[in-house]
Length: 324
Image (cartoon, rainbow, N blue to C red):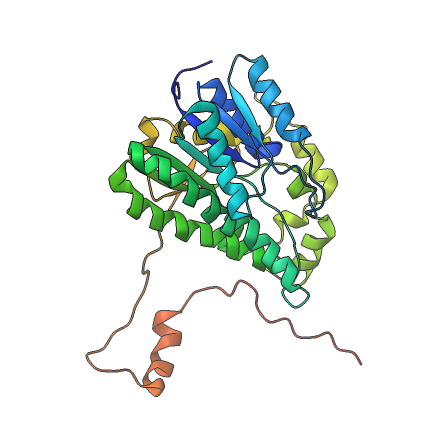
């Protein structure tokens, strides 16, 4: 066990399985006391089990660390508060919040129900607010904190995931605003783009990506990868596992939670595979201007050639097949 996080206390949501589990285990290895917060639900949102959280707590304790379980639902403001309260009751403080919990309700927008939209935003985006709102109170008092919100590269735009993309990119904006608000109080906030083969990613059928790829929708190729090819990739073992191992996310996340990691804030950090990445902050890449107000006619003459020239369409129109 290391000691970079000795004396620190962390809450990790969604840490009963997958990426969250790996983060909780490594935080504990570095000396943090961990609240393993996991609702224990199924992928469809049904059910509620204490077993996943309890098993991770037991694993940490067997390794010589300290941990406590919480079975709350991050989409509930009150239950998110109970996660923070567990940290305070069991360990006396809270220094680290990692919001990893998530669900999928993949559907093309023209088939998506209101419930499928609301459910995804409730867990990811509202869950981020719920947990952060309770966590900042003790962090502000001690003028120290590390907050990591697990977003996704899907926030850059993923066909069939309008709800997930909206929630995940919303978390990026939320984290950047928080970094500005909380930085003066010693609290660093970053968004994480994780990756790995988890039960959530496995729930997306290969046929979904194949259909998108057939329609010419950019970005679908990776998700259209045949299962056999994915299996071959997973079997390319090394002493450190595979690039798709969810545990790969834990080392860069753990470092960001350390004392030294506080120097980084307001950033999007990719932790997938055997690399760590920093994503560029959005900025103006091209603009046009004039000393007076534009007319529609003038814009029509300059926008195609100057403002958007050379910009690819991510999903160009596909004419319907000839029915004759």
